[in-house]
Image 1 (cartoon, one colour):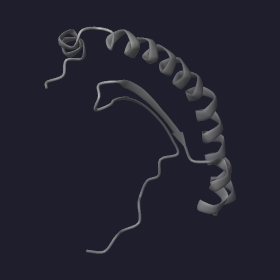
Image 2 (cartoon, rainbow, N blue to C red; image 1 turned 180 degrees about the horizontal axis):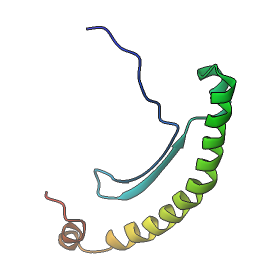
Image 3 (cartoon, rainbow, N blue to C red; image 1 turned 135 degrees about the vertical axis):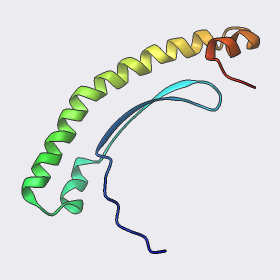
Image 4 (cartoon, rainbow, N blue to C red; image 1 turned 45 degrees about the horizontal axis):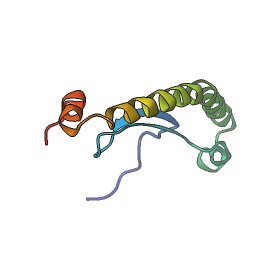
Length: 94
């Protein structure tokens, strides 16, 4: 089976994740703006992608910082609870 070219690319993403050790974390990632010209050859397309990256950075970085701060407090509180209460709080099965 031959590998086909990817039909999509992740330019900007923001996630809230639950880790294996039941901590809530955020992930904010972006295509580095310096890579745009190497990956895309059309100048008009490059400018649009760079605009999307700048907008994503300006809007999502603040959201990421807010979530990161709030989730840190929540994680600290949850992990101070007795283990049996943590399971109920996080609704996980062990």
